[in-house]
Figure 1 (cartoon, rainbow, N blue to C red):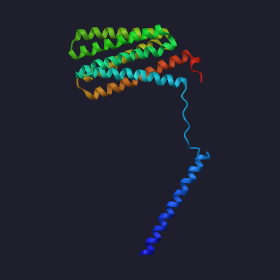
Figure 2: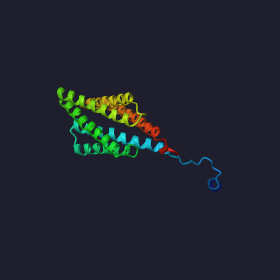
Figure 3: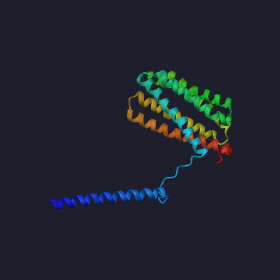
Figure 4: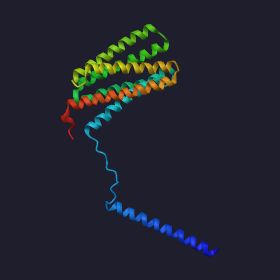
Length: 223
């Protein structure tokens, strides 16, 4: 019995020695540069960074819009804070275009987007109250504002096609409306789907805007 125990102990010690030797060998190989599997840090270009920044801004736009929708439809606390943060996002978007189009253009875009937000709140509130007259009036002004945003952007950059912009803006309004209506009706499956749809659409829009800036100012994005 003692002999068997002694043999088992030797086997365990031997396995430990082999494992230690293997670890040291692998460590030395890594230090000597023999392991070609070490990941190389990805290089982020100026164009990549613009796309990342633009996506962040427009994702903030739909996320804080959703926060405001939830506060209005479900009568949640924090309404003032959600709206304040949402309005700040419009300032951030305006500031993001200043390096390319100047301060006046940035402030103009911010003003148009702030109107977009305030009218959107009217649309949601009128829908919640079931007030058709107010809803139709707010919806009409909302689409007029969307056309103004499209006109302004297309005049600033020839790569931003006016028809494409209007189509994207109209789709954005429709999807946001779908999200609000589904929430009001407590159709939470449709509510989630609508948010996913508006999220996917805003990523397409932000990429389109970033692509247009890169094409218009290629010298600013040289590697």
